[in-house]
Image (cartoon, rainbow, N blue to C red; front, top):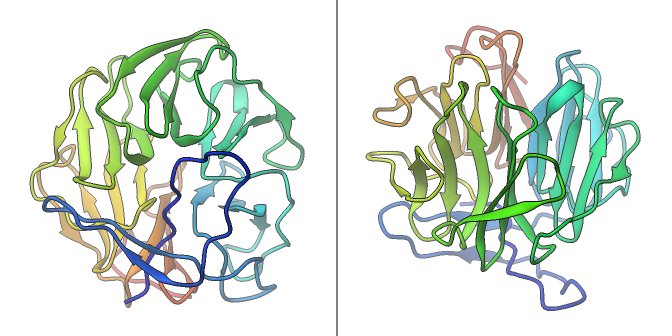
Amino acid sequence: MTANTRHAPRTGRRAALPLALLVAAGLGGALWWQTQGAGVRAAGRLSGDFHALRVLPDGRLLYGQHAGVSVSTDGGRTWGAADGAGDAMALAPAAGGTLVMAGHDVLKVSRDGGTTWQDAGFGTLPGTDIHGFVALPGRPGVWYANIAGRGLYRTENGQDWRFVSPETAGVMALAAGPGETPRLYALSMGEGLIVSDDGTTWQRAGDAPQAAGLGLDVHPVSGNVYLAGPAGVARSEDRGASWMNLGLPEGALLVTADPRDETRLYAAGESGLLYRSVDGGKTWSQ
């Protein structure tokens, strides 16, 4: 079965990853991944590293990978070329309509929906290999960044970072629910989906299904949690306690829900096909 890309902490210049299937043994929730070439086809199928999928309030879809960010203006039917802006492991909405790109040696912001990017600087972060980034939906000026091999850091001004927890050192993706004190979610290479209510202590999310390494999204209004994995797309409406499979026709690598209308879902299948649903996952089309 195909799978998503894992990235080891960097020790210098990025090493080229082979076109090979890599499997991580997990403690009840293993993650899986695969590199699938570079670039984005003009129509139909995505390729590359399957790092991030984000739908913007204006309806545009963004796809992040090593080669940068690609944009679709027609619901994922066709895609522009990657922009080369950086390794887009995470694409996170932040305050004032700002979008944050975070990844290997990358922390950039866009104020025009990903058309242009500016360096944000790493401030007091102890490293630049970011595996997981989120801005809190209820407090979008509060950012969390996970540094590979080190753990979770928090800032309220984008420059002064405070160490929060070492328990996320092996995490690949971060997400957060709504509210002043939201639940945090992360995909761990060893444990699958883990959750925290304070950012400091983390625990496995019950019966969460197996997930792709970066196949996590949380709706900023409802707080519903979405996972993409070998069984397709699953949703939890109770903060990760129980799960419903949404019946995607194949395994999934990425998933995102429209922040304006949660009935609109998008998922990247293992084949690279982009699926969309307009009824909350009851039916899917390409």
